[in-house]
Length: 364
Image (cartoon, rainbow, N blue to C red; front, side, top):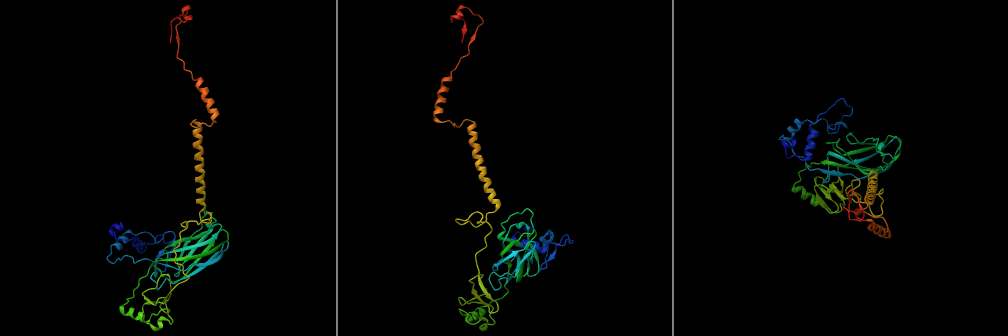
C-alpha cells in the first residue's frame, strides 16, 4: 500500500517510516523502554503496531526526504578472555567514537551488529544483553532450552535496531550471563554501527587553500597550531588536506590530523560457515555444526542402503546370476536336455486290435 502511494521509496525509507509512525500497543507490558532518540521499543512488540494511515500520509508528504547514504563504522575488536561464571555474568565495554572525522562516520544509528566469540559447553543457557551509551538495553540472545550445542559462538553476528536514531558515541556494554550453572570463557567481541552522518560544513576554496599552505608531511608540529580555523583535516602521512579522514585512519579531533593506522584491521567479518576449511583442518576445527555432521552421516548411510537394496532386488529377480562359470555351464546343459515339448493326444473310447497296432482312430 505504501509503495503504491510512493514507488520511489527504498527499503531504508520504509524502515524509517515504520519506526517514525508506529504506535505503542499493550501499554501495560513492562517491557517497554524509550531509547535515546525518543522511540518506544519492546522485545515483544518491536516499535509497536503499524499505523497504515500514518505510513501513507508520511510517504506522500512533500516534506519527506529519502534517507541519506548509509555508513558503516567498525570499532576495534575488544579481546577479553573473561571467565563466564556459573550462574554469573561476564561484562565488557567498548568506547565508540562513531568514526567521527572519517568518511564512514555514523552520528545517527539505524542498526547495530555485534560479533561475539566465546566458549561454553551449553550455549543454550546463555543470555547476552547489549547496552548503548544512551542506556538502551537490547537482549541479543535469550536462553534456549533445546540448544544443547557445546561449540559456543565463533565470531557470531547478532543485530539490534533498538538504538535507532541514537548517537553511538560513548561506551557500549555487553553482558554475558549463564543461567544453568555452567562456566565458560568470553574471548572477544566487536561492534559495527550502521547509520548516517550528515556533514553540514560548507568547505570553500579559501578553506582548501588555507589548509594546503599549513598541512605538512609528517606533521612535526600540531596542525591546529598553524591553522586553528581550518575546517579540513591534514593527513600527516602524505601532507594532503582532506574534508574527512579515511575509514582506516587514526583521527585526532583536537589537532585535526589523520594518520594511517597500523593496528586497525580492515578485512570484513566473515559469517559463520562461509570460510572454506584449509588443508589438514578437520570438520570440527573448520566450524562445521553438529547438525551438518549428522546430515552428512545420514546421507552416506542412505546411499549405502540404497545400493544394497538395488543389488538385492536384482538377485531376487534372477537378473544377476551368482553361480560360478562351471555351474552355469552345467545348468545350461541340463536345462537343454529337459526342455522337451509334448503335443496333446486324444484317444477315442473304441479300443480294438487296430488301435493296439497303431492303426486305430488315434487322433493327434
